[in-house]
Length: 488
Image (tube, rainbow, N blue to C red; front, side):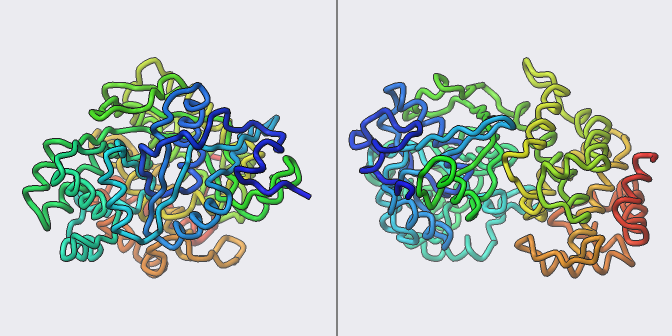
């Protein structure tokens, strides 16, 4: 029988485990969104540092307001906030139990979360709330202060229901008590995530307390950061693998690739853990790394995702084994995406892309095409459309990126090439499906979605090839269209 993971069973486990006294840890970080990525990324770095005997006053206290947060809290609390991370290369798997998380506040309990944010020991509030959690208006690229959830927080600022309302309330409590503000650190995969978070917090505060908004703008640090690690969702498959391979009964394990990267601006006025000792790269300006990752890796994911989804391919590594998908990725990346990425210090962009392909081809990860296809209405405006817009401004062709957009549109119509139904895979799925089906006869309907394309969809240099590709996909299917693009 597998050993149930908890603090009392640690000594019996035959895997790497915390080499520090967890009872001596102090929670210095309140983190919103204890999903798989955070637990395989930020928490891994902190665990490494704690094993060096440092950073023990920067343990993680979880916070959240969503039903998914409640389920995660329930699972982690039953395990004394311990969980297993399994790092997988193509050749081997290595498991480690992490202990850097010490608590998870009651989900939905705004007063408890605000009190913890206002506590003197809290020096960092960090976030992994997904790309769609920042209320960004794609048409303007700025925070949508008119969103109903934000308007509700503005009406009842003492009882907020959004992360930004909670951060404002926590900062307001610190200000009224004469405490220095905590640093707000986004670990989400969006361009200039610190700037985006700053705008969201300041503008949320401005709706109810302009003076507090001005204080936040003048005093709170919001460092930008680039984060990277492929981390699939956990299913019963992974829970069984933990039992079979490592003899651990863990309800919330995380499986991930062995690659990990974090580039972060060093802007933490109240102090920070010495993460540079465990591989985090601190830089004055994270923008070059950010653009490289978002465009080459995340943009590349989209290039792989939609043709694979339409051809009924299940896993990402299987997509990379498909000659048409791999050639499509190579051509779009080398001809259109990489040339739109500015130079990155001490980095060869083509070598970086080669590593991306190696990572995506890793069969151990079990990453799914469906996950890469998820939430395109939030991801496309961040990972694909900016590259299209940059190339159009320079008068450069976007034939491959137009095909990627057409593939996404065709995917959203809801049927694979075999006629199998595609289950809803986007928060805006109903709208996307309706527009995609109209676009089969009128391609402009798809590009007119201003929250996704802004004004880019109206540019004839993009709209014309998009229309041609969408028509070809409808008439001949994905394989034929890819072959045509590739000249095969």
